[in-house]
Image 1 (cartoon, one colour):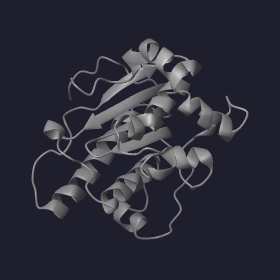
Image 2: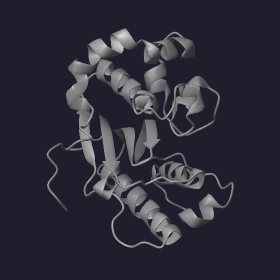
Image 3: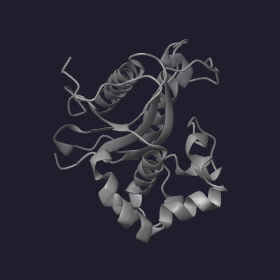
Image 4: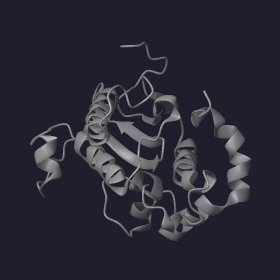
Length: 213
């Protein structure tokens, strides 16, 4: 396994990212986005029973123990962003390995292709402060607007934004962000405050992972 510059420490938060090989699309249908969401929800658990194939086709409830907590996420056509907290030793690495292998197998079978789907080892940037955690969550949730995929966050289905607004059930540990705001509406205003976002962007640029690398 390639040496990782950023050590992944239990109890800490990380902005995690990967994209398609040669920037190829990794999500092309509604079913693709739903499948990736299911893999996230399944593999964040430490006790992986039953097998994913059985879990994805039933209403079976998984145990409470987790290897990672997913704070926020966004799936874009050729990449994804995750805001994660590592719970167990090697939790993020194992989680990402399982998610990417499982989804890649699904995508390759469906599209009759072979070979890697994602571009090498995932990237991870350490989140040092609560302020950074909040601003990275904003960056992740604003991706569909910044990427011109939607003019309204409410219209974009493939992020944790709807969980944060309480309009969709999900699996994110969103209170770790929302507890810093007086209400969900205040968090929405925080997301959409373009002036403040522009000011803070330069300060957190090193946390955002350069898509052009």
